[in-house]
Picture (cartoon, rainbow, N blue to C red):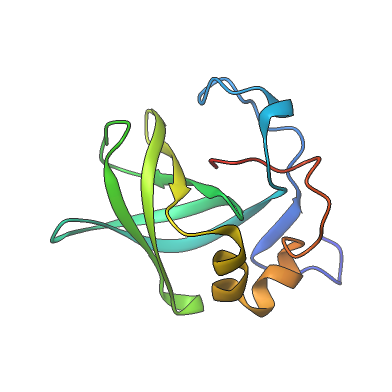
Amino acid sequence: MNSNKTADTLPEDKTDDESEQGSDRGSRLYRRRSILWPAKLWVGKHEFQAQLWNVSLGGAKVRVDIPLKEGACADIQIPAKNIELPTEVVWQSGELLGVKFQLAPERIKDIFDGAAIILGLDGEDSSDGEDNS
């Protein structure tokens, strides 16, 4: 790993298999970054352990041991970053979910604060981003 990267981020994600969300790379609106952050997924009053596999200003890819239907609402809590975000499930494949943040991208950037800069989510370049995971 490059010495100027934090231990919990990976190089910019450009090689993921997009088949599970059925989306075309060209349809992404926001740059996404591979990460591996522990998280909690709240569905109503129920809490589930999860991992964030990538993040963008529009959404995230989440690994969780429960199936959720497209359109389900869930809150993602990232305890290490003191972040909680309302989301909607936009795709599901096995243990992976694509979620769309229910807040404006500018608000997501503010919530992530310094982490947005580290993750490269603060730039104007949207050619390699995505809108839902």
